[in-house]
Image 1: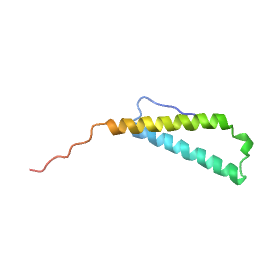
Image 2: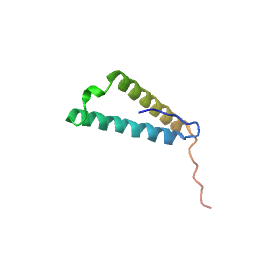
Image 3: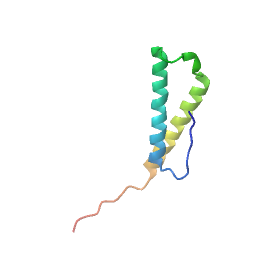
Image 4: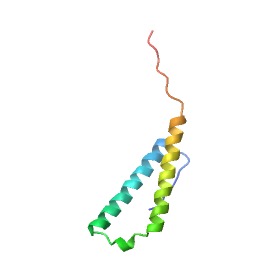
Length: 77
């Protein structure tokens, strides 16, 4: 499971991608704990690095979204 960051992706797209990948990791671990996947195939060090990277990406995207200018509402006349 590789993480690729594209310069043309919006912060929302990056956050959504990181979230999707985190859910995939959760599903893999759920299957492993249920016995339908071999838990020995999961490298905990690599998994921890990947989760950390995804959380950093998610945090950066959310920070960028928080700093983005807020749309102004048009006042009706």
